[in-house]
Image (cartoon, rainbow, N blue to C red; front, side, top):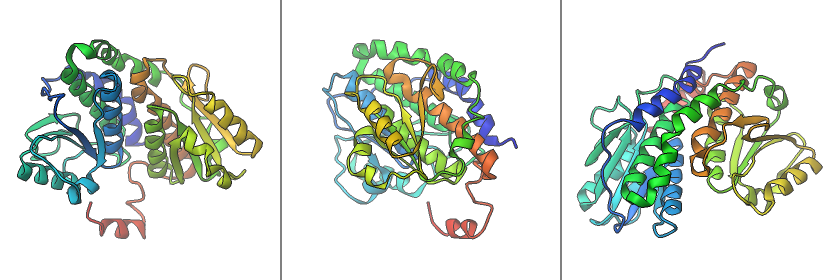
Amino acid sequence: MHFAFDDQIDSQGDAVEEVLHSGEVPQLDPSRPLLFCGIGTSLHACRVAAYWTSEVSGGRLRPAAVEAHELALHGDIRPEDQIVVVSHRGTKRFPLAVLGRARIAGARTVTVTGHGAVNPGGDVILRTCADETASTHTVSYLTALMMLGRVVQRMLGQQAHAFGQALSTVPESIRTTLALPPPTELPRRLINREPILITGYGIDEVTAAEAALKVKEGAYLWAEGMSEELALHGTPAVFDPRAAAVVIYPGQDDGGRADQLIKLLAELGLEIITCGPDSHDLPFTRVDYLMRPFVAIIPFQRLVAELARGRGSNPDLTRGDVEPWSSAISRVLL
C-alpha cells in the first residue's frame, strides 16, 4: 500500500531547499529573552532551535523551548520577550492563544507556519510548506527546522558562519539519506513488540522524541523517546523481552553510555536496533553534528511507513477513519 505519507517523506529534500533560499528572515535581538513555542512535532523543532542557539552562541544564550499549552495559560510574558511560535497549519488553539497573550503584553512575535494558514497571527510570518495531506507530519517538521535554523543564523551573525555553511549542505544530505534502501526488513523485528524505546544523546534526544511520536501516529505502536541516561536510571525496571529498543548512536562523546545501554538491553532480552551513519540498522548520511536532526529522523519516518504496511495502520489518518477514535478525537478542540 502506498501512502501520502510516503510522498511527503520523499518531498523533503526539495521542500527544505526551497525554504533555505526563501525570503529574508527577521533579525532577532540576542540581548533580549527568546522563547520557542509549539506543540508535538512543532515543539520538537523548537527544542532543536533552542539547542542550536545555545551551542552556536557558545552557551552565552540559553533560550527556552516551551509547550504552547503551558505558555498560553501560565507564566509572565513581558514586552522585552521575543516569542517564536511554530504551528504547522497555524490553526491550533493554544499557539494562537500564545500569540494573543504576546500581543497584549507588547512582546515581539514570529510565526513559523505552512502556506495554508490564512491569518496565523504574529508580527512576522515565515512560511514553510504546503499543508500536509497525511496527519503524521514529516516535511513540515524539516522545513520548520530549516526556517528556524535561518533565524538562528541571522540572529548570531558572524558567530554562526560555520553553522550557516552547514545548513547549506542539508538539502543534499536529505536526498542522499532518502536514496538509501528503505528499511523493509526491520518491521518483522518490531511488528509484534511493544513498547518501543527510542533513545538519543544530546541533540539526538529530540530526534528520539519525534521518532516515538511518529511510531505512535503512523504505526499505532506505543513508543517512548528519552535520553540514554534516563533509559539507564529506573527505567530498566520495566525492560522486558516483549519490548524493543532503537538506540540512536551518538554523534559526540557520550561517556560510553550508548554501548552500556545496548549491553544492558541485550542482557534483558530486548530486540535492539541501532540508528546512525553508515552501517547501522537505520542508516543516515553523515553530517555536521548540529545538522543531525534533519537526517536522523528520516529512517524513522520510512520505518513507520513500512510498519504501517505490515500492521494495516494508516499514517495518513492516524485512526481518524475508525471508531471509537474518530468520534472521540473529533470532540477534542485542538
